[in-house]
Length: 467
Image 1 (cartoon, rainbow, N blue to C red):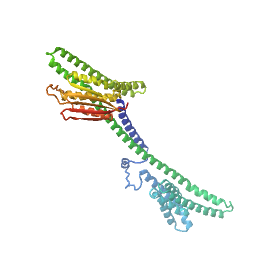
Image 2 (image 1 turned 30 degrees about the vertical axis):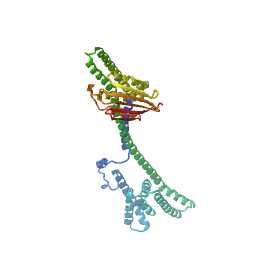
Image 3 (image 1 turned 90 degrees about the vertical axis):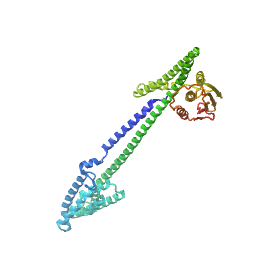
Image 4 (image 1 turned 135 degrees about the vertical axis):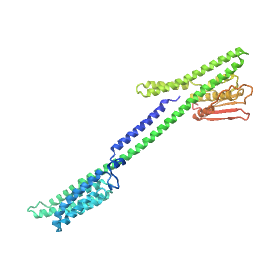
């Protein structure tokens, strides 16, 4: 008998997979830096109402940066207007427009960096340049465009710094040397553009890594869900299969013995007054068959209890020896079941019940696999039981053939003689189905049908791996 603990493990595995999938989804949701639709509704955030911002805090941050940048550029525009010889309001307006462009940094980062490069000669837009380069490096803009704009920003800052430093040195009373102005210009240009650019590259790489991990988490969650569904299907299939096997075993054990008991009881009733000695023999046979049926039922129930103990032991990791004992008990039950050598006794029981049975054995008898011998025995047993039920008084021929790497059996009966009284045995209609399932489960061939003489024939061939 199979181990029921395995099927319970299927169910436990399905529940664990579902629990892990829920935990994984919860952790992913808490750790993800995204906003769900419910959060958007709660905060009043919509893509149409807030343009391109995904969060309200992002919009507040960008607007705040734009205001500070506009004020900075406006103050610097006053000095630029004096140096360039234009009206101060014009310089202020230019600074306000240039600085306010920082609000667009998430939507058009390239345009913001271009504006910062354009106002570099006017010595304005320090915040605009730093934040613009950071946003450009952190965005999904192609790297060649980022490198080109960063190079333009470094070059523009270097040129402006070089010119201003050269003018300052020329107006001074000291000579620092030819290396001073270029070195300071390089340090200033790299110091202004380098840190925001590198930090933006780091943030962009981190964001892409988080997105890839989030996608992987979604994929794992889907896989866990599929595995959980598949485990539930396998567990349900295993339970159904096991119920079918138990029903088949109970049918084979009970139906044949009880059928013979009913036949002998009918014979006992018929001869009780005419032949008391024969009645006594029939009564003894009924008692023997009842005891045999009880013995087989006890063996089957013992295997079921051993399997249940195996399930209980699996919940406790300590007594591993009990698991081995339960498995050994189940294996012993298979080994101690009926075998091919018991077919002769099986035929003898039917003869004692009044059936005319002929047993023919072809080939040299040998020991086969335990499951093969049990299946062959059950097929013959069920075929004889069907004769008792449906063809009372018919002659039966049982053939058993030992072939190379296989065992064949055939039970054929003629039509009912019409004289023997029908015992009135009920039929569930599952006998042939059970025989076919047993044979096909071992990779054998099963054929049954009505003969030309009006009888019935059951044939089966089982592969014997022990050969």
